[in-house]
Image (cartoon, rainbow, N blue to C red; front, side, top):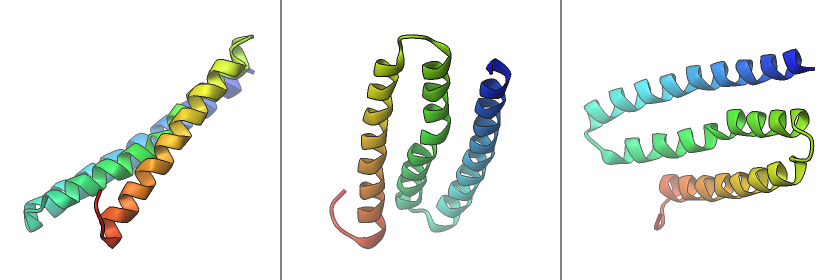
Length: 100
């Protein structure tokens, strides 16, 4: 079970890191050509949303492997999911207009 949990967490983290580097590279190219801070703000929000996958994988791994930590892990998971929804709403406002 430890090996499966570790492999799943490692795959999630590696895939997320590849996506992060792609977003950062795209933001650098966009910001250098457009000269806009809006591209950086948008990419920062994308990265915050993308961070949820490895963080939730880590929380699930801890909940599976450490006895008695399920309640605390669920609390942290719910808090970060709420934060991710807030960031997604801010991203929608940034793209479709409105105050962020």
